[in-house]
Length: 138
Image (cartoon, rainbow, N blue to C red; front, side, top):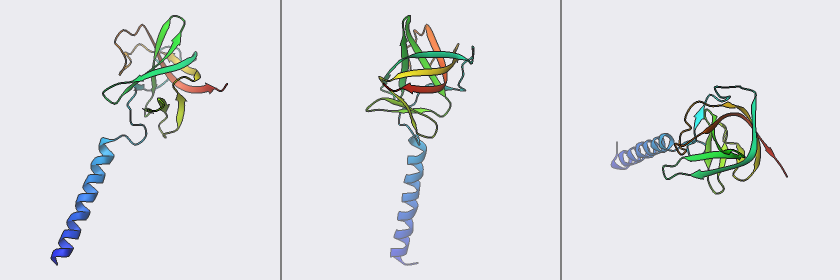
């Protein structure tokens, strides 16, 4: 094999290796991790929660979302495979479809959660595991 052929072959191997590493390191959909579970909550699976979606991006490339319900923040856990994007902060389903954006009025179906919600502050008096999301357009 010629020197040129060897160099071309090596370049292809390096390009494939770099693409493989990029695929493993960066999530396929949203670039921010969110707390996920099986959806529906450990309590009633027919519970509902309505309010304005709020959230924050964390330094570790994760995001914490909540709904402010009169008694305080209700921290949210999303179905498995969901993620988030920033600018504006929004939550995406397992297919990369935007389900809700920070500031939107949302209706969530699911149930209360006994689990501590990851990526959120530890003082979580109220937790909800969302199974469905709908945005109230105004």
